[in-house]
Image (tube, rainbow over all chains, first blue to last red; front, side, top):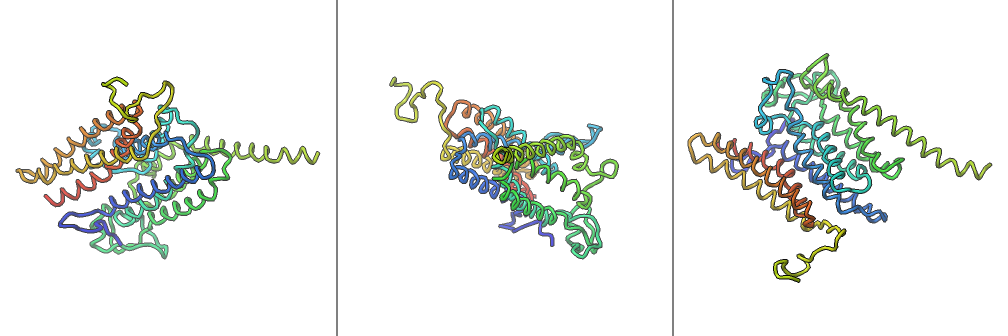
Length: 271
Length: 115
């Protein structure tokens, strides 16, 4: 099942994970471009400063995806140096998303971009994640042991290729779960993109859904437990929980306001 | 127009308050420059393999070049963008971020080859 090396060219290993991450970024870019063109066709052209927002998103994502897992230990001496972390450290999707979001906000503030851009990014991020996670599916530990019929079993050779790998035991295909989530999210986002109460709410909805899903799937992901039976991504998501709840309440209130406003003219006509 | 300002529409002074639009073509040029610079840093690895402790030397030089590239592209990209160059600065920033994906995957691949 595992194919950490996609192909070998003249002795140079082309790693599956790196190719899938690059592919994910390219696919996300293509979907983003399609969204921008669609807006123009619908008579709502996107300001050309969107390029600056894209730059902020990518730079923030690139930096935080590498440095987001840097200070994992309370004893600072146990953490890698900055150079070690940048060169050899784990990359984190959650950190990357935080960095991308912060980068976009900063870029918009600096260039004075008018309006909200989340609806353009949401489907792109979802489909990009589908492609990117294929690399994880083919090169990382699938998940924790399971008795479910769809568990995947690693051979002895495959188990030796991944840290914590166990041969002959059925494991949760946690990355397959995540690919399924993002694929479903992509379809739903396309359906919802013209139905949200306010521009930009699409990305908020997607991030909330992913936060909830990621918290749940971490129980079968096989990441190291850090504190109170929870992994580091779960602890990070718990820390973000107040912000998530606040956004959920805002979305719900906004949808109620829009629904009431839509019903008001009909009530006046019927009065 | 005075001589030192150059000639042609590319060097025409903009009316005050009018922002120069960002063009996709110029963004693409900036992206290509940045990614090309990334790929050049990868050359440090096979060149380092010609010396003693080749893989270590190559990786060290590669990381040093990456740090220099980061600072250079960030500063130049931001300055050009603020000066409203029409997109090359933005392209440098986008290209740097995209290149981080290519160069480190390539670094690992080349280090495995030279080790």
